Amino acid sequence: MVINNSEYEVLTSCGWKSFSGIKKSITNTSILLEFDDGNHIESTLDHLIFNGTTFKESVNFIENDILEDRRIIKKKIINKDQYVYDLINVEDTN
Image (cartoon, rainbow, N blue to C red; front, side, top):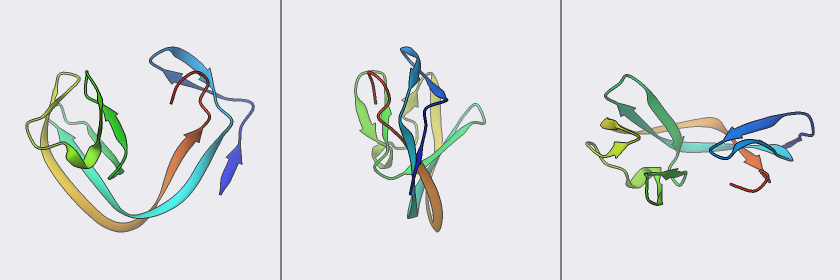
């Protein structure tokens, strides 16, 4: 399912950018990365995360890796059906 967009922008590392829509799909496996500051990221296994020098799939991070001055203290695979969302055609970036 795709939801078209012409009204909103997304904040990127290069400022606010337009995008053409949001793709909604379902996954049955995700990964949860918990950080030492109490925050967390849950994403698909192949979601790309910038680690300061390059992009790396979230499944390839391990406990004690550092992301933006935060240490990963827990990595957990979650097996349940849930919706995931991807922005489509973000202007000048991914």
